[in-house]
Length: 449
Image 1 (cartoon, helix red, strand yellow):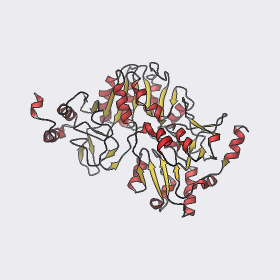
Image 2: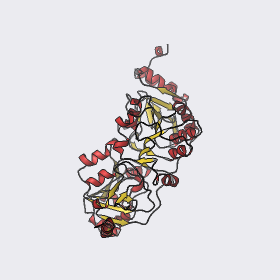
Image 3: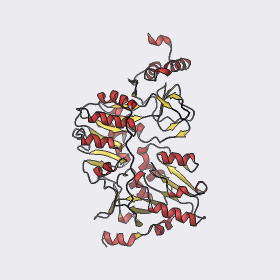
Image 4: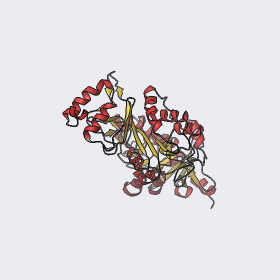
């Protein structure tokens, strides 16, 4: 039987496919832009009609729109949303009492599925249409989906003709033989994440970081205005032959590639290819990645592997943070008790970049934040707020950058670290930070001699 015949036999309607879900099941929605649409609506309809369909646990990550199942009036009593990494939608679900974050190093996710996760009863997610070999490409969501399909009891794919086909080395799709049902969805447009417009603070920070980047360096950028500002300044620079090996592929890389700054010609591994685990951005970004052999989608345990990162010379990792304290502890996933994002791959890239020959790791943040109450507060704090989670430990922090300067904390004693960190805080807060450092016995006036 050829793959087209197998496809026809497994093709069904969304309302029929979701009948696989039973009370108490663990239902996996895949990842980011690949979360199901037609299947999610069908499951929400079924839950509304069948009150006994309850006790469901959902898994997802970087949720780009609110799942229909979570809009049910009794959602908090009937289901739990479990997120591997939080977007604004995930944060809202957590604050509404419907969801929870699952702590992890993102690089471990494929192994967690294969070895540690007890149940995946039904997996359902969007893919590109099946190719002539019988494979459904995961699009810009390679991440951990091959491992998910390997362990799931039932797999339902929702075909979306707007999903780009993202080429890679391995584990970029699922074969028709691994699929239980195929649903041809409504072909919704890809969920886009507009690139933040860099502000003056972002550009000031980028202006300190970009001169530290050399020709042939390999880049990893996080999300937000600051990485975007770095990309913008690189586009205007004369840097050449830059490489890409990044967890998340964003529009900043597209801009640098179009400006001729990225060639990946000097990479020791995957030469000539921009390596990434997932991509979220503009429609232009998805069009650029579609069928592009210069871009290489790969599972996250390949991309974020510390050994692989460290083997790439001149690796430059640029990430952001919520708070940094005077010990050098970096909180990037929570603001106090409030979940903001997740650990992601920050620690892997912080460590891998420093271990790389000539590599550099940068943690960048604005010196202040203005709260909803209008009060300006320092992002550099004496100690992390109650409940704040340490994403990168003080032993791992290398370069810390704000709009007021850049300091390298490797090899610095506790008092040297405190003094250096205070030096890049907003001037209005330095005196109080110094007083607190002295109280904590990590600074004294004789240190200035």
